[in-house]
Image (tube, rainbow, N blue to C red; front, side, top):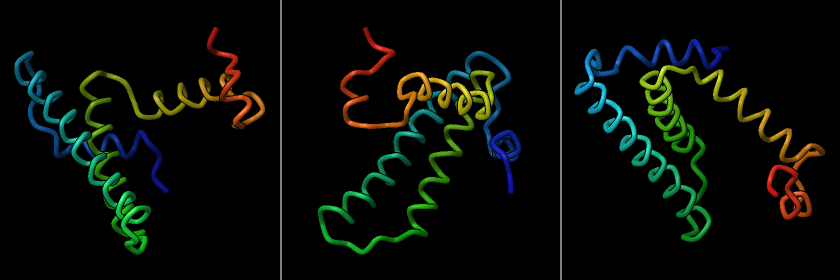
Amino acid sequence: MMNFNEYQELSKRTMPDHDNAEKRFLAVANYSLGLMGESGELGDLIKKEIFHGHPADLEKVKKEAGDVLHYLAGIATLYGFSLQEAAGMNIEKLKKRYPEGFSTEASMKRVDVK
């Protein structure tokens, strides 16, 4: 099984050149817009399942989730951090926010918000 760092490294092979400020700027725009587009496609599949009565299609959901991950990995690369770092930071944030796990009550009384 592949970890986030391995995935991010393999995903880099399709990145456009970003060796100067202008190219990096364009690559950030490309990957940000790609992330939004693929997130929308994933959301649309789920919307059609929930609201339009379409059957769930696990393969399409996985494909779109993978596309989202690809663009997210590219953004992480362009900003100089790893998906592994981002994932670890997110888990630590969630542990602080919901120390006993998620509940509606904990959501309303978040410990990380004053």
